[in-house]
Image (tube, rainbow, N blue to C red; front, side, top):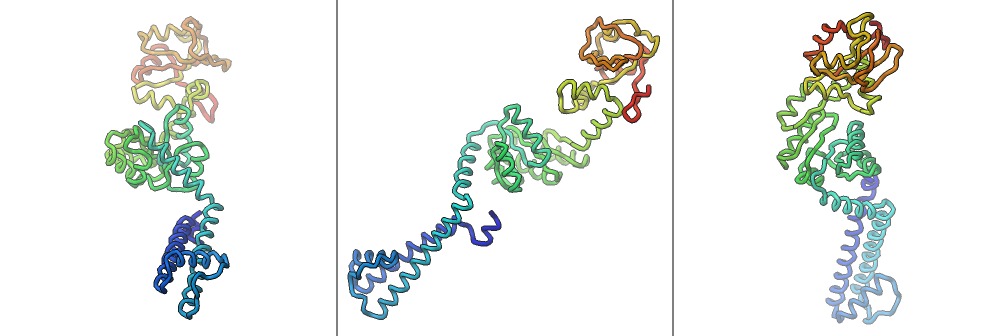
Length: 360
């Protein structure tokens, strides 16, 4: 659309300019004939039959050079304005401007109706994944992005959209910032996310801002800007990879087997809990004893969330009377400061992996 506007101008502006010019020429024509001494109706009639080329005879004689020159100029100017307006209308229709204008007006009305919704700033890879999850949970969502292609993609996915720079007050107002409950700034630029946070909170102090940061050093800047939550995708990804290397059974259990897409261990760490994989040695104190013995021995301070048998079978949430055997691995949830004591008491060892294969 931008390229076509550079070539032929804005089509809607062409239509309006053409119509305005046409009406101006008609008024000038009537005034010109009035100056020549014609009656108003005769002047209007002459202007209409001249511009539209009807071909009827003149109601008054056009017998002077000045009047004939004026009439010829009126015909040329009138035709030119009409052609200019019609050309703009054709361009308007062919480019779908009418449909887009109606769609934009309808989308604006829908956004104005929203209350306590979420504004998603940025529809890149992170933004698209986030939008899917929010939509699945029934969250009202408005996508803001300055990239026209991303806006069209968001619209094709059924989201309400606002095209423009999310750091602009007018754009955020169009997205309903005054009525929004959450704002997610997930652009790949930390500086842009800082500006968005400042602008959003400047307009609505009660909005909760969750911001993305690529550089860990940007976290403090975003929090000082007022962001309620700061997420570092690179750090989360690195932690996830580390868990797959150091605790692959627990990571697999907490993600694929439990149906969770995120890394639950990161969230557990926020409240001081940790998931640990502990291997029962041959002839250890827990061999032949039930799973519940671990929980009882720890004054119920531990929770067995999974058990992997020596043959590879994995049991989710095993019964308390499930008997433990040599080579079994228990997946324990407990306070991170208490887990070393549990390992020491029952002579358990943390499993070690090399290239995805257990070596201890």
